[in-house]
Amino acid sequence: MKYIDEFRDPALARRLLAEIAARSTRPVCLMEFCGGHTHAIFRHGLRQMLPPTVQLRSGPGCPVCVTAGADLDRAIAVAGLPGVILTTFGDMLKVPGSRGSLQTARAAGADVRVVYSALDALHIARENPERAVVFLGVGFETTAPTVAAAVLKAQAEGLSNFYVLSLHKLTPPAMRAILDAGEVRLAGIIGPGHVTTVIGSAAWEFLPRDYRMPCAVAGFEPLDILHAVRALVEMAEEGRPAVVNAYSRSVRPEGNRVALEAMARVFEVSEAEWRGVGRLPASGLALRPEYARFDAARAFPVEVAPSGEPAGCRCGDVLRGVLEPPDCPLFRRVCTPADPVGPCMVSAEGACAAYYQYAA
Amino acid sequence: MCLAIPMRITSISGEMAQVEVGGVERPVSLALTPEARVGDYVLVHTGFAISVLDEQEALETLRLFEEIAQYDEAANPSVGEQAG
Image 1 (cartoon, each protein chain N blue to C red):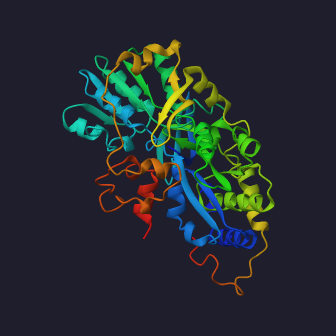
Image 2 (cartoon, chains in turn yellow, green):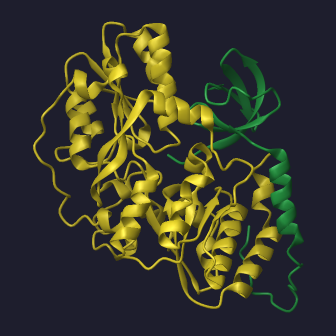
Image 3 (cartoon, rainbow over the protein chains, first blue to last red):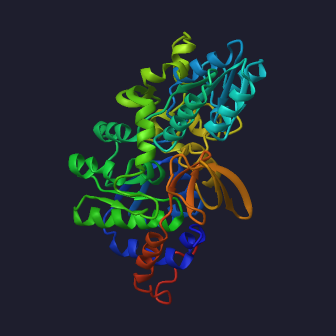
């Protein structure tokens, strides 16, 4: 068992597709919350193989895409401060801010370094004791515990030059905001499998309870996604909303307790600004006062001019599932991965990037 | 940041492990999965294992799919033609 090929078995995929086609009698729109699912669905050609009654919409589950313009501008400003090394995950590098990106800041002399892990940023801090190493913390509940673990490690080692600029966000509040806005008529949610590995499938019980919305938590291989779609179609047909764990090899109802504890120890819940959605209460993570010495927002307060959406950019509508990328007037004509207008075209999990790469 | 890959632990030293996939080895932190053991498959995200994969659950899930009655492909050749 290697956990990849087994879940790509074409014969089993055909059976699942046949079941879905047989059970699906009325049109349903399902939201795949997570950008990783949008990409996987395209990569494996699932959209064309599902019956026409099943429509899929992508949601706001792309942490790079939902980073607010002002937050990015602040990160770019911090990167430009003397003595700072700004470390970041790769796909934040080319996201356009109001006045350039982290990449253009780097070209202008800022020390911006791409890292794969928060642990790499710790390593850079150890190697450069005279510099302030700021890690740009972008990501949902999958990533936040790893950054918390890095802060705890920095504390244990007595590192005094490591900082986190936390733009981390929580997914359930975004889900609520989308449903409360009522802009898209959804029959079910394909839940994010790796976020839920951390937060636990029980964290989604509010969907059937408060919204009568079925949720099937899915992994990222084709059989995982089809398994979740089948469960959602069944629940929609029977009017029987519930949370189904369709990724049981990784997801447990209680999630990963160690990861949740690390996250809760280092971070507290705060208000956050989501591109395309606005300010949401209790939807972000900020470093707790006990960890203030690692908080880049406190150590490097910067003022930035208010930022607006780039002219014509419809990322906000794409993130709320209201618009599909090909319907954005800038899509492909003006906005491309090489020359992006908004983050949805830049991020590895961006819906626009997925459509650009895979859709005819 | 949903990207996470199943990788097999080949050795453990303190909080760090060597993991392997496709013949390539790399270091990973087990800080979030202290229960992981050599030989386990873990899901790796940004340099950390975030869960230990449950082989029984994986086999059970595959069994569920196999139990779906064999679709009559002769009668309905158009379904899932592009699958895989």
